[in-house]
Image (tube, rainbow, N blue to C red; front, side):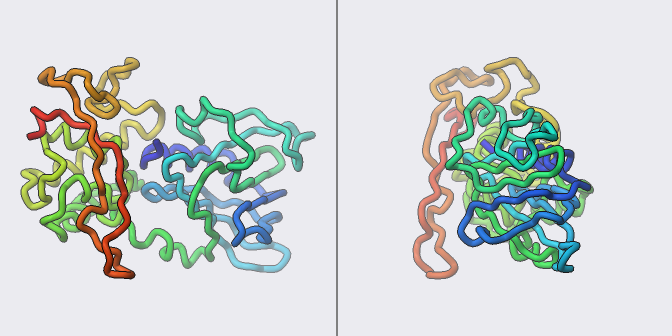
Length: 303
């Protein structure tokens, strides 16, 4: 499941394979971008911003058209893969040698159905392919904030600092009555946490998901731990929050329904949590559509 760490890893792999290289072919398979041709441009960098992925591409040398950013969001099933190509394979759909790092361990175990491909970027030696990604959009570089300007502090920001920490806490406290489980998933408060880290963080801090933000004893410690966990897992998978990388021992609660709590032995519960409960759509004023996700907890440790 893509979260801030795996998106960072995908961006790093794309940067390694594409940055500084001229695009020989681009194929963007969404209606709004079907006629866009990025060939001839040079990829400048690939970066993550929370759970968003940005590929920054230079100006068109033939027309002078300005630099652009290709934005994508992995959501639940999206992935980018980067392949090293044989020179004879360039310009064709022949498979290359897949590089590690650009997709999650889970997605690497599955074949990539061609109908899920949304983008192909190819250079003389590499091919990047996006499958099942969402929000595939191109904007002028100076308009990136239209796509990611709403995000809170990025937990994997290169220069993470006390200012980032304080700003994340401030944003969380702007809605003190909100359940902490919903607040941690709100990317406008802090960017990078997904379902797995949310469950693990609330277990580590012995918090019930419905606890109001205002009643959390040490909000700063939760943000600090979130940053530390994502940083530890940034460079490789699978995720480890327990400190024990052995299979079956990496996580405290997530995915461990009915198995004993590692603290107290009580069976772990699996529930469904709606992050939109009680929220209104700012555009319509109506109840926001349900956003239900699995939630794991220890009923004894997290009373």
